[in-house]
Image 1 (cartoon, rainbow, N blue to C red):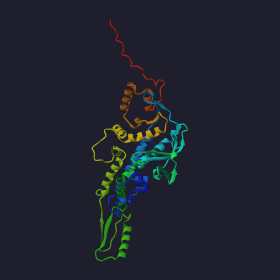
Image 2: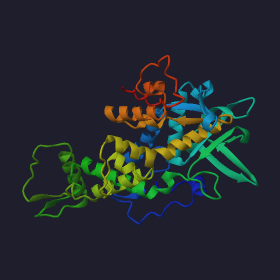
Image 3: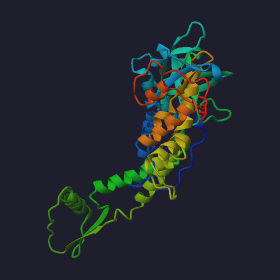
Image 4: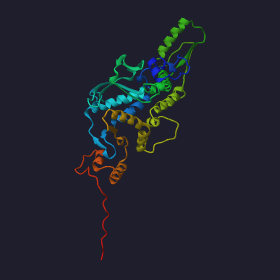
Length: 387
């Protein structure tokens, strides 16, 4: 099947990239790659690793709910309905993971609202759908959403997109936009797999020097010889006048290795400028990380933070103003003990934090006076008069 997408997706996301001409016969052909489903792209390890890393980062962060702004800002308890937004018993982490997965592969989260707040009308329960089960079409001025062909009522629709396109309802699908790169990488991996399945012998010449073999005998001899070679590490005994020449390609010289390295870095780059370096793919640059702390900061700043903010805005939209959701980004940055304690000391000295906040970071219980904050600086001691 071609990497071109089916009709509805082509209409929503624009034309798929042109596929370079090549033969569908043989091991290395992009036309043999099927990217018609979101899961198919996850066969490319760089895509799966990038999406899973983003989802893992967000779902392992501490989620906090606040109200107010500036000096009125204060933390409040997380609403119970938000702890299980999918209303399926799997919790908010599972719901967020599915959301990041849908965004990362198809650019859209679509769900059915199963419960609303009686006061605000905001959703309190959302059943998320697989993005490939969703279609949207126009009926006059009305947009009709369908799930597996069944119409989804507009008053029960939940839709959050990323990568918006002017004039389009759905956000752009990263897989559709980069089908050529992903498909090329998968085609190279298929070639590699076939290379080793065939025992390192893509083609060979089995020749009788003294006689001509008619087609019927040729096919029989070929089948018997291939059966003898497959999975057989013992020597093969040939009769007189038979000659066998294997045409081998060294794995280090095979084109799929360079294709695999290039497409892996390109696929990871889809999800953020620092993703290839974080996952260890070669990018041709000379950038290195001084330490684990700097690497964590780069991951947070250049790669993960835009995705974290998208989730924060989506969840905050569900809350009544002025409430909002915020993830604790400090949990992503791991420092050595001395650096961490110095940071705590600076924060306490400048009244950025109180003692209980520091103790919470270090997994220590609060103290009776741990919420106290000095109201004034301690005055310098009075000089002692002598004489």
